[in-house]
Amino acid sequence: MSRMPSQPAQPAERPDETDGDRPRDRRRDRLRHEARRAILDATEALLVEDGYERFSMRRLAGRCDVAAPTLYHYFADKAALLDTLLEERFELLRALLADVPGSGANDPVEALRSRALRFVGFGLEHPTHYRLLMTPRSEPAPPARSAEQARELMESPLRELADGGRLASASLETAMQAFWALCHGLISLQSSRPGEGWSPELVETALDALIRGLVGDVRPRTQETA
Image (cartoon, rainbow, N blue to C red):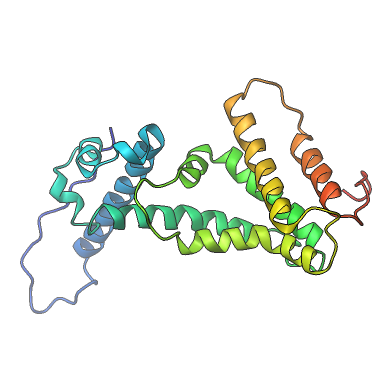
């Protein structure tokens, strides 16, 4: 059970002290940050365990070992809490995709490959975050801003290839569906069967095969070009 750090009692203000410049103020801010972090982590754990349908602020309060009204000192309501959590987690993914070496180069094929490798690696290294991000919300809500940005980073190389007439035969929509199906499949299959003895070259081999099938002018990669 995640127990939130207790907030210290607030002493009366003294007129000769400057706000934000006292040790107790720094301690109060640190405890508030830790409590907020504990709430977000507990929210993610509950969502991954039971899904959005069973999630409630009351169950979250029980997980954090606090009274339910305490949660509203940190987040206005359940929707605000979920929005904050998803934005934070999608921002982690977006930053990883944006920071891929060479992904901003002129070759959209290399950008597509590099970002796909980073996306699959993220899913395998952070299975809890991945499951959270891929689980549909039970209540309608606009997508997180960082989610849209991450999706654009993943799909923009395919659009550039289509605009340049480099897709072999599939439509852009079909190419995107095949691309996402492979990425998610590589993550889900290896995560659900960790003891299967997967080849260390599986992800790169599968991605290269898909790219060669989608893009007509791509030669097979060799050890010299890999």
